[in-house]
Length: 534
Image (cartoon, rainbow, N blue to C red; front, side, top):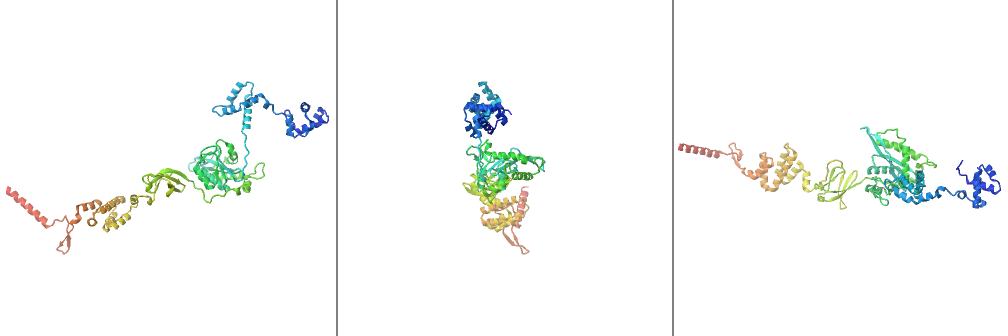
């Protein structure tokens, strides 16, 4: 077949027969070669003055180099010209809107006898590949864990609404054994990412020394070639599990080529296998994914006599670091200012949490988890609350000032107990008020008025006024205030015994006999004066 290279072992037979003096025609017949091919090789030996014995002692690749100087295309003057402009072409291709077709048009105008477009692109690709070789990465057992999200999504149907909900698929793999983990999560948010990562570590039964994620927003705030800025929550997660985080370089898929390859495998061995199944919850979907991934880990690898799971269990699992005893609890951080109601407002929960009133107006640091809210000021814990989601207030009595504590403690028992400490009769007056069917808040304000009057009034006078109010069923604050102002309590006097032998208590509204006698005399005097005038 034309253009087919002949093995150097057969060429050595040609040289050996030629050394023995056999003709080229006979050599061709004996070895089944074309006569012209035998003539070409013998001619090269004679032209270059090669020693046949020396050629026979050479290894096949070295002998081939003697007879084949290489592809003439790479010794062409056009190739040398193109090679000299390679740096220029690479720089131009990085500029916006510049294509290879544009560069070829410029190249062919400068070099009309140059390569056609297809050859131009071929040599350009070859030169770029030669300048950017790929390294061979060696992996150590239990050292690294590569994680990423698949580009394509899976979905399930919500039974309540019938809505098709798409989910992200998290993939993690250990590069030493190629052991793989995958699960579906609602999104790529930080909490979903860390939940999937914690499930991955549980499945593997240990922690690696290094985590290598992509530059996703859940892990990296700001990408950088040398020192990327990590999400603070991911830092906490890494400290809890005891591994370092080394994100890949942005737009460098070769840094995580292994997990990229596993994404393609998951497409084939999970996505394709589940394409005709319908799921009605993310839990059911994850169960199916776990079964397919388990089958993938237990499948024998090509050109190897063991599976990924066998190698993981035999060589890698025992060198992973043990998992911490306590599970990681996601922490959130924020800085807030204490409002005048001595509370901070956590916008994520739409809820207020109290701090001691002495910190009103100060800036505090808040760290909150799924179950706990902790508030710091100048590095000191000043308040801790159970986390509550939904509008409302979570307060502690000790955080309130005395006025607010009084307001919070209001109750019938509170006012009765407070009044009895000051005056028994005042306690009785307040008890009588709470026996009335009124709104409690109205009575609370009335009791505050009673206590205020007690503080401002002489104890003896206040005692008499309260007794007068109770005897006459005058239980309001205004009534007690007027009794004190008008000194009504002073008009109470004991009267002599009545005819029935009982004592009658004097009252300002009882005028008596003398009042009426004086009134009658006055009327008679007025009538006499009128008759005299007439």
